[in-house]
Length: 165
Image (cartoon, rainbow, N blue to C red; front, side, top):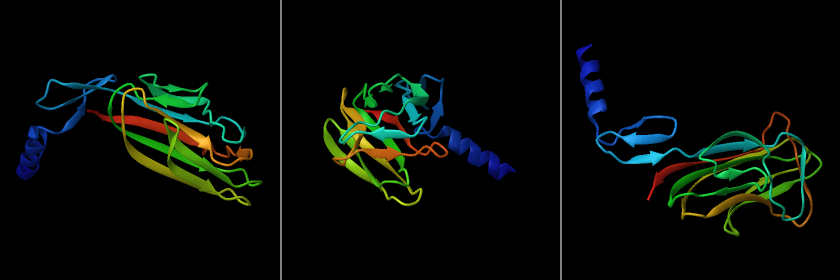
C-alpha cells in the first residue's frame, strides 16, 4: 500500500505528464503553456462513388473540435505548425478494388489499397509535421471511378494535433 502511494506521488510529480485541463486545451504539469485541443473524425454515411482522382468527402462528422475539417470539401487544414496524427481506414465495394492516397498540399504521403471480390479493409496512421495552412485530404488514386462500401461504416478519416511547434 505504501509502495502504491509512493509510485502515485512520483507519477504525479513528473513535469512532463499530460492531463486534460478542459475540453478546449491541454496543459503540461509545471508549465503555463496551453495547447489548443484539435481533433476530428468523419466517416461515410452511405455507399459512395468517387470520381477519377476525386477527393473523398467524409460527410458524417463525429468529432470536429477546432473546426479544421470541412466535410463539404473533405479537407483538413492545419491551423498551427505542429505534429499531427492523421488516420484513414478504407473498405472497397466488392465490385471493385480501390486505391486512395493521403495527400498533403497536392503531394501523396501514403497509399491505401482494398481489393475487390470480398469486403477487404485496410488502414493507416501517419504522424506528420504540418505547417500552418497545410491541407490534408484523401483522394482516389486511380483514373476510374471507385465505389466505397459502408457496411458497418468502415471508411473513416481522422486526425488530431499532438503538439504545436
